[in-house]
Image (cartoon, rainbow, N blue to C red; front, side, top):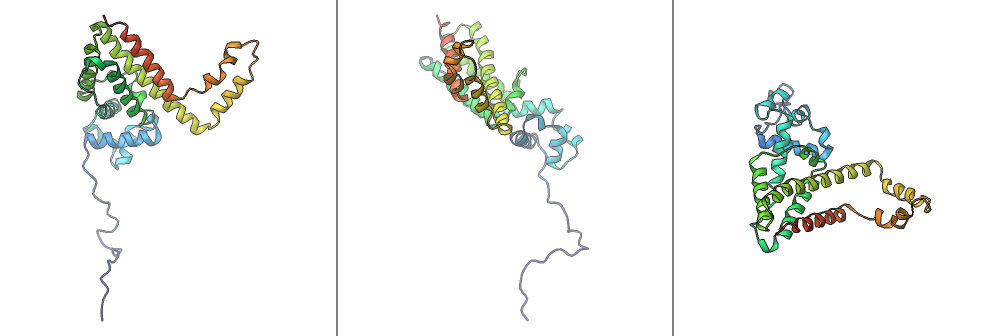
Length: 233
């Protein structure tokens, strides 16, 4: 008699039956990766230590061995994404385009993680990679000839513009998931306004309603960088 060599299921009394696969060991990096996945899928409000523990299959109390709480977890997430943005060595002749490219990179990275940009508001990043990013980015401004005080103020203004732009973009994207016809309804509202009362708005309805996120971002970026260039002696 010939027996087929196919794998059999575990018998009901086997100690191996129903055993969970071995979990990967917890690390700060693993926590950060899963936390980013939660934000990518469900947004920043969905992230909590309890939700993170559920995703990892552990007790929430066990996470505090690796992070002090959600605030530190957010810092780790921002550190992870900021490390994705490359900052070139300063080229004084092309500092404006260099700064724009860096800010575009930051905008894209933040925008790729749903509303994570909201975690950067009113939050001064102090991690090693965030400080390295800031140091190299400010060096571009200094190399362009901006006075130290102006460079310091710009170092706050420019990331703020990028963060708010990315955050608002994510909020609008989420709104459009709930209300796909939102902009159509707003456009219809503007079109129905009495022109004798709002002549300027009515004359610019097409222009006001046709500005998409990237176009608005590029316009704001151009205005800010051109404005900064006026401070170069």
